Length: 328
Ligand code: HEC
Ligand code: HEC
Ligand code: HEC
Ligand code: HEC
Ligand code: HEC
Image (tube, rainbow, N blue to C red; front, side, top):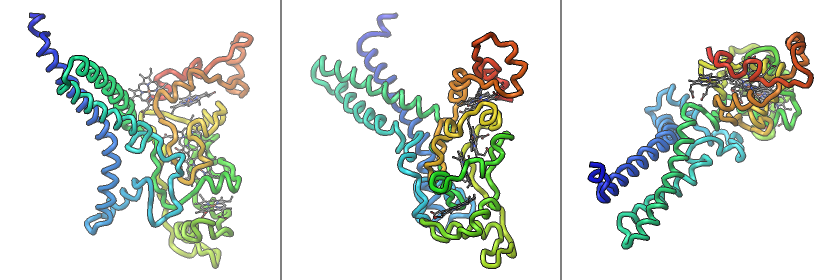
């Protein structure tokens, strides 16, 4: 019985079957994952440009067209942030396509090879290529549902590079709640007006973008009165944890003294905000396992009392690894 099942002929056919199945399945996963964003963006753009494009489609397309928007030539994802995360342009695309071609050629060798050594070597090469494909697929599949590299076009082109790096504005001037609350908060447009009631022109966008601030607020820059009807601005949220995760900024920025950049990357260099890190559970836990807590605030006054001399507790020691700390 055992021998009958594993004769050479059946073995080879079975191997081919399994390999082809694995290969098709993994290519499928890769392509679905990437196409689902890339193609849907394309389709939505075409739909929005054509007459059939409804308002909601247009809006969705405007939010999703990530790489360019011709009406705003200055609004581009900066080159250094373009290939973050999965996708055809992502860091795994090149190895994937090379492995795919190598795999197909090697399979040709396995099937059509004239001698045993040729078949054997082709087989080894095919397996190695398959390994690469499998690895890429694993990586791509892991990022399903996450949004590393996500960089939607915002209603007003707001550049952190212009404001933070060139004009030296502190993060907390705008994200005022970051030390005291769960949410960092997005500034209201009145905050922009603190400066833009005077600065009404930008070097790259002229008056086009700054005048949108006035339109949203119903502000008349000539009379300096709010004498027109305004409308609420809808910034598109870039970072989104799933609803089942609890995250609190104050805990990290105020108590933990963690820099914004550790989780958001170099925002100060971005003309358009990009989700820089893969906000996975591993990302949170890696830090909680290695980071010492800072015990010089009142909250730890009593806790410190119980520590042995020289003992440096990590976040995991105060419950930073408990499921219920982050999930509810
Ligand atoms: C002059 C005001 C201003 C300053 C200063 C500023 N920001 Fe922002 N920030 C905004 C506005 C407005 C948005 C929403 C539009 C956008 O996403 O580009 C935003 C968005 C963000 C987002 C994305 C939020 C989301 O939707 O997920 C992050 C992260 C962020 N800022 C971090 C920072 C950091 C870090 C600094 C300092 C290095 C900083 N910001 C300085 C105004 C500011
Ligand atoms: C430990 C990681 C971490 C640090 C440090 C951090 N953030 Fe965040 N930030 C996040 C996560 C995660 C989200 C998404 C939250 C969600 O979806 O619930 C977020 C969301 C935001 C948002 C979107 C609005 C909101 O509150 O959800 C802004 C703006 C922001 N962060 C700014 C900042 C600024 C400014 C700093 C530094 C002063 C900072 N963050 C520090 C992880 C961090
Ligand atoms: C503390 C002052 C200050 C605040 C607050 C501020 N800005 Fe600015 N903003 C500036 C300065 C200075 C410039 C640079 C003008 C230039 O290009 O010379 C600028 C430029 C701009 C530009 C044009 C950039 C270009 O190169 O064309 C836009 C658009 C803009 N800001 C939007 C906003 C928005 C939206 C907010 C509120 C979320 C805001 N600003 C808040 C000071 C500020
Ligand atoms: C770069 C390091 C770092 C990262 C990344 C990070 N944290 Fe934390 N976290 C800390 C520190 C430090 C503390 C302890 C703050 C204190 O002293 O209370 C903390 C505390 C917490 C606590 C409170 C734990 C407790 O029992 O008191 C929660 C909940 C939490 N983090 C959630 C998250 C989530 C969710 C993420 C991922 C999206 C995340 N953290 C990513 C550093 C980090
Ligand atoms: C420090 C914060 C933190 C702790 C502690 C934590 N998680 Fe998570 N968990 C997260 C984040 C963030 C995500 C969302 C990841 C994503 O979007 O891919 C997540 C996602 C999940 C998911 C959904 C699967 C997925 O990939 O989206 C499950 C299930 C889960 N966690 C179970 C647990 C269990 C069980 C524990 C305790 C052993 C635990 N978590 C502890 C932060 C945490």
